[in-house]
Length: 95
Image (tube, rainbow, N blue to C red):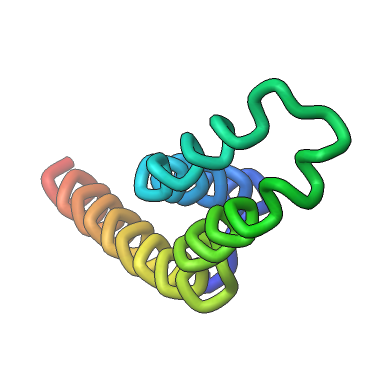
């Protein structure tokens, strides 16, 4: 099976997003510091910092990186299913 369920897709994205936030943490903190104490001026005062955060996040959560993560996840899932089938087959033979 080469497709992810909706739950698997959501869990995978949440995991990748959490990792991206860790990797982009200095930029996120810099952006948060810029926003602190601002209301309307945040739009123009922190625009460049926001773009840096967005670019960093896309580096980890964009279509290409997500496809790589998805492919690796499917490969690992298929290996686990294969091991489970072999184990089940061996158990059936010993009965």
